[in-house]
Length: 154
Image (cartoon, rainbow, N blue to C red; front, side):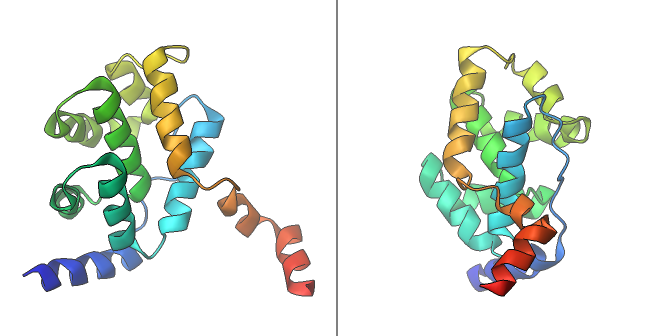
């Protein structure tokens, strides 16, 4: 059974488009971090899930189950886990509000949890997401034709 779950995640990780590359959080840097979390995990869902479970000290099975039900992207998980940790909201409630309001953008989720731009809670969520994002903007570098030309010549 566990092998089946792992195989399913591997296949879905390669074929499922990430839930969104448009985050609309109201914070451009936060949006870039989320995009880059997805970029780094691209094609390697299982490793991303394992790392996030360790980072947030939560059962891996909980994340796998959520992925199977709702196909959260790695950035979706990172954001949901950050909100859960900072607001101390039950995981099931965070997942439900995420599922219902995600298409409205992260700004709607921020509103639901009272994460205004200058609130200490939002700053904490933002710091957690920054820790999970790569230092470089890898997604932008990949799209930059000048960067591609430069690396090909080296």
